[in-house]
Image (cartoon, rainbow, N blue to C red; front, top):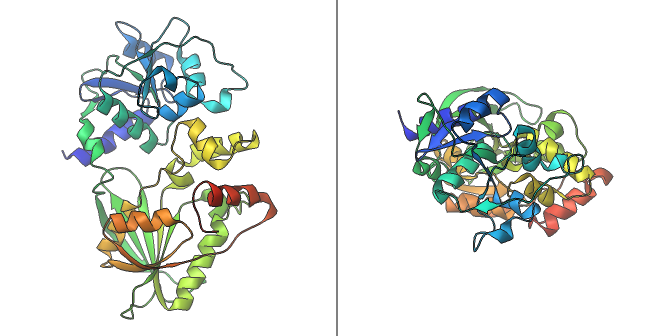
Length: 349
């Protein structure tokens, strides 16, 4: 079985609360573990706890390690750290209602690359990046190498699964193309609007946003940007909307809602993501480049206010001949959110 498929199985195992082994070291996701599973994993001795560097900074633990302030941090399990306490350590939304005990003692990771890979897998699974480490995985556990995880973003494995005509409000001349990945369960889609005319297509990379796209949330500008992009592409006569299943800048729906709760406590979007243990933007724009390659497009006009999207596509081999701004969706409820995108994430707003 290919490394990509093994990684997909490992992601599924973490979601189900099952242990996985990476380079021979066993991991169990904190968020999906239960008492029975943890008891088996802890045999013959309690397993330690691995958290992301971002979460460690929030807990004031990163300064206990030299030179790697954002690398994974391993916490020695003591008698008071059971499952409930581990969840409280992992989840910043519980910081106010479950003040953390201590002190903590940090340890050097047994294998740095294995630990980094485990954190990446937890994030890909849409879970809090916190795992029990060093326990007993069992003979039936999925076993992968850290290099299998390293290769995911460098060469996303996609294939066109289906395509069909799809008239839309923006244009009656539209076709939808669905893509499947061998590395996770995400199914990305492209909407081709108009007909190729010999010019570089106007392309929009739109990350899925259930709350904004479907529920009309005013906390972000995603819904208006989606509809504005479709209208702009239709007006241009030819272009492609890539709808990427990377909710919440790649942290997943549940974690995005956790970030919303932290924003209600006064943290901006970037700091909320950091407190959850993620980077400010976990999206993989290499997926978009792979979709464009399968559609036969290597040169685009990019409809975006985000220079990172330009850099991400060009790094993956797609030439961006023009960056076209997209202004839509400002309202009193998302003013702070838009300020954060401009001031902290470098958007051209």
